[in-house]
Amino acid sequence: MTPERLQDIAFWARDLGADEIGRACRGVVEKSWPAGAYVCHRGDRFESWIGVASGLMKIGTVSSRGKAVSLAGMPAGMWFGEGSVLKGETRMYDIVALRETRLALMNRATFMWLYENSVGFNRFLVRQFNERLGQFIALVEHDRLLDSVARIARSVAWLFNPVLNPRVGPSLDISQEELGQLAGVSRQVANRALQILEAEGLLRLTSAGLTPADVDALARYGE
Picture 1 (cartoon, rainbow, N blue to C red):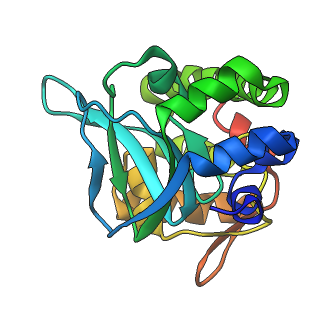
Picture 2: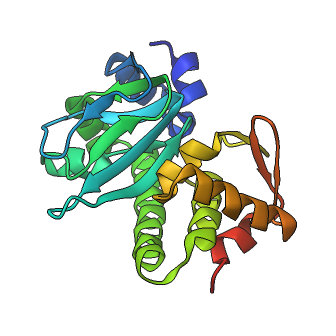
């Protein structure tokens, strides 16, 4: 992988020095998965740090009672799984491609070298962990307190999180079925929720996806 390609798909790479980005490039490969494919299952040992170069991923799990739970959606530009790589543990969730997806995979040796040697990389990790903590605290609130409209609103807001995904633009190409999968609701429920949010002026639906009008209001919806 060239430095130019890595900087295009990994915003954190722009803060690396010349030696650091050279080391990072040697430790990253790209692979593709078709829609519906599992990258790994809960309990698998998958030692790569994962970046979404294109497509859309979902991380989730299934409870002991068989209830499927969506934990987060990962559009192009997001990187995830750093906790599992740092701890060298098996994955605690399933990773599924919701559409044809191309991933950048950094091997653990390279990740640990950057962790131990790069100030810029560690600054990125601190920001990443802080945002992830907020995301999963909000997830608990979603599951216990919020109705389907609020769950859709907040799922949209997280997809437009500028810290986790600085590459995100003003609009996102995503189907109602995909958004429903990320929020843990059916396509029909997602459709009704999006219609309500559009009527309230918080987002605009397009033929390809949606454009949020107020990300902060979507993130607080239901309070």
